[in-house]
Structure formats: structure tokens, C-alpha cells
Amino acid sequence: MTLRFAILGAGRIGQVHARAVAGTPGAKLTAIADPVAKAAEAVQAAYGCDIRSIDAILASTDVDAVVICTPTDTHADLIERFTAAGKAVFCEKPVDLSLARVKACLATVSANKGKVMVGFNRRFDPDFMAVKAAIDAGTIGDVEMVTITSRDPGAPPADYITRSGGIFRDMTIHDFDMARWLLGEEVESVFASASVLTDKKIGELGDFDSANVILRTASGKQAIITNTRRATYGYDQRIEVLGSKAMVQAENHGTNRVVVADAAGFHAAPLLNFFMTRYIAAYANEIAAFVASVNGGTALPTTTHDGLMALALAEAALKSVAEGRAVKVTEVL
Image 1 (cartoon, rainbow, N blue to C red):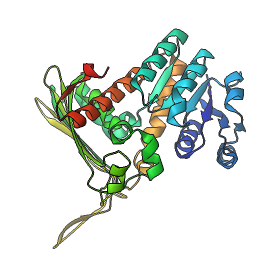
Image 2: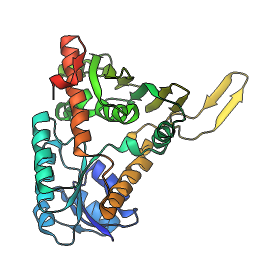
Image 3: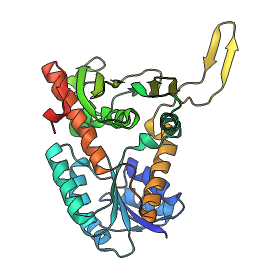
Image 4: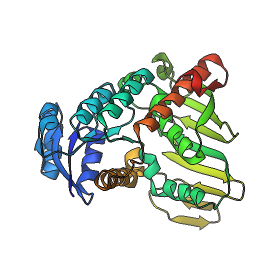
């Protein structure tokens, strides 16, 4: 079966998903919707799909699934509308910035018997998948500690910060999802510290640019997450998982993997500098996983529940920063 897709939103991430859909066996890009004509026309020119309105896509009989890449405050409504119409949904994170709205959306999806996958692309990065495979195979024994380093080369524009929900809901949320996935247990408590160190304007907008978080499960497993909006040396993405028998880690990606050694030391190429180049394979893999799950009738690998729990950890982190204490996740859910 060929799964026929429409992309809702032809911006930067919509273009990434359009490329992934077009390149995935068993998938076909049928339509694109975007109020900006030039953006929609660019996707149409690249992949030969129709340009339609969201309402037209909702009523279309030649669209089986949609990828939601519209602004965050539209996600929950679109999920509800398209699952009610019987279409499978892939939605970029987050479902919403409000836990209450996410819970309401989950209830509607359940009532609609909908299929919804939330786009936590890092689970589908080949290196991180290999780390998880080592854990699942028992290679490192029981997981005890997870360390996640996630540092951006620079901050996003001010207008993005004001609508993103802040560093915990926008940036760290990926790391919260990775931590849950790698720990293999739900997080019980969150202790977070955050500062404004790189740009005072970020603080003036009510956000932070530097954060560290400690997550703890009921059994005592821990995950440490470190974030910053300024890594002058490139896009820093590393994971280490310590187990009872061994350790497994995934290192950074450079622009190439050549190392030159001379009397002055070892010299490597600079790191990749943008998430869309670092995670090209991850974006392709997550769409392929969505297609396989929908066509095969199997469980989706990331769900609205994963979206809810990652957002809950973000809310707990914000509460922890405000109150200077560890916060139990049950306090915010």
C-alpha cells in the first residue's frame, strides 16, 4: 500500500518532511498547504504535488496521512480535526504548550481512535539508535546514568523565542524525550538550574539560554542534561549511557571524519553547525517508521503520550528553577 501524504506548512521543517516523504518507499506526497504561496509553490515545483487548502486536504479522498508543520498553537486543533476525518497524523513537537490542552487532545484522539505520531526525530538518529540497541541487547548491563549534551551554536531570533515556549519547552524537550527513552523508566523528579549567560536580551524576553537538569526515576536511575544557546565550536550533540557492566556513547558529527596528526597535536574538522544537517538521516528514518507503522498496523514508535510526558518534564523544570528545589512530575501533571 502506498500511503498518500499532505504536508501542512511549507516552512523550513515542512520542506524537510516533504523531502523525507518523497524519498520514502511506500509513501507519496500528494498535496501541500501553506498560506504563503511562494513556499507552497517551491514544494510543488520540487515534488510535483498539488497545492490545496487545509480544508480541502481534510475533505480529500486521495490523502491518507498528514504531516503537521504549522505553528504550535494550531497543532492540537489540527490533530483533532484530521483524526476525526480518519487520517493518520504525524505532528511536529509539541502538541501544544499547555499540558491541559495536550490532555484534552489526547482524549479526543482516543475517542477518534486516531493514529498520531509526535516528531521526536532524535530517537531515529542512526548513532542514537545504536546506543539504544546496545542497551536493549544487555551489552552495558542495567542502565544507571545517562548524560546528554545538547548545545546550539547560537540562539534563534527573538521573535521565535517569544513564541517557542522557552528553552525547556523548545530545546530541552528533545533531551527530555531522549532521557525517558534511554532510561527505560518514567522520570519521578526534576531538578533544574537555568541562567542567562550568552545574551541579556534572551532574559529580557523571559527566557534562559543556559540550563542543566537532573532527572531521577523511582529506582534511582539518573539523567543529566546540559544545554546552552551558544557553543562557538558548532552543534554539540553527545550521549553517554553508563551501565552496570559497560558504557556506550555517541559522539559529535564533524563536516568530515578526517583527523590530521602532527607535532602540534591532533586536528579534526569542525562540527556540523545546524540541526537540519546533523539530523538529515533522523528525519528520513522517522517518516519511514511512521509509514511502516501505519501500513503495517503496528504501534507507532512515538506517541502523543510521549509528547505529554516530555512537556510535563519541561513544566517541572520551569517550576524547579522558579522554586529552587526538586519537583515531582506528579506536581505538574
